[in-house]
Image (cartoon, rainbow, N blue to C red; front, side, top):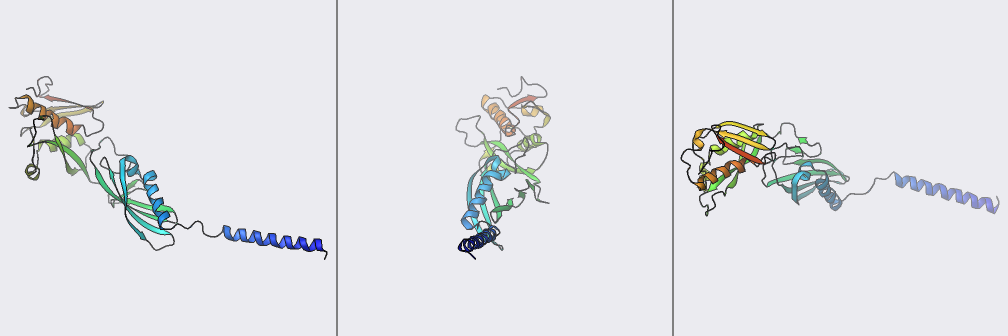
Length: 262
């Protein structure tokens, strides 16, 4: 074999070895995802892909991290808060504007988020409640007066109340408002300027305007501009927590002009 042929064989063999090595490395597992990389993947997934966090989340913090039983697999627990109640992105018109704390648990396998559950009930990957975990309650705000008004007649203070979930949200809010503060709430200094015995005659919401008619008890003995302003403020603020309501018109027995006059 001539020298030139021998060199050609060597080059051919080297080429075969290099090709084999390339093939070998190409079928090895991909990038190793350690703890820090996986935690950052989890954080970025929440920020960019979690429906609940995307809607109005903030204050994202890691609470816990654990290695789970597979290669490059981790579980992370984060806390965050939302500016409105509910889960996911499709929450309808009703949004109780109140800071709501949440805890989300994620599983990351080889750099991929395979599971993300918020508060043990909402699947962030699928964007739906877990089976049997549909939220049967909702949080509303009721606006009451304080026993220390400091001369501010229209000042009202929101308090949270948990009620059964319903489609008649506005009527439920006003119904709870008319029931007044609980004994515990009164002990904490909350009170109402609305008379006992007040009932809703009619409630209609059209084009962002809530038109609500009460029985005559709303007007009974409420002379004085300060108390009238307090009553209006309680009703209007309680209804305006519903994002689709921008204006409230109050009437008594069908009369708008004479309702709640000083």
